[in-house]
Image 1 (cartoon, rainbow, N blue to C red):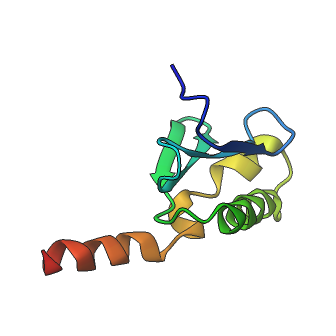
Image 2 (cartoon, rainbow, N blue to C red; image 1 turned 90 degrees about the vertical axis):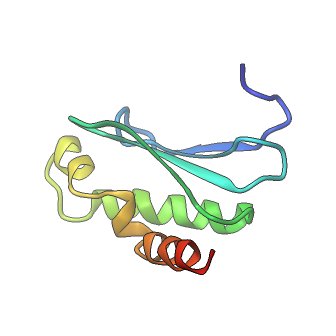
Length: 99
């Protein structure tokens, strides 16, 4: 069951084109969840606990999903979280090598 003390916001009005930003533990690092048609739900960490920044990133993701697409399916399938957050994997590999 979800912790009622954890913060969560959902953005996007179309089914299948929603982005959810949430925390797993109160005050913890924020996560993002996006539905990818044909693949299912994609969940990633944002790597920070800043709620305002997470809101800006979620809104940017919604805008990117709608750029240049004809239908909701096309809007959803063209974007991955890797496009929005290109530095996450690079930063993660730096941390892994430093340990």
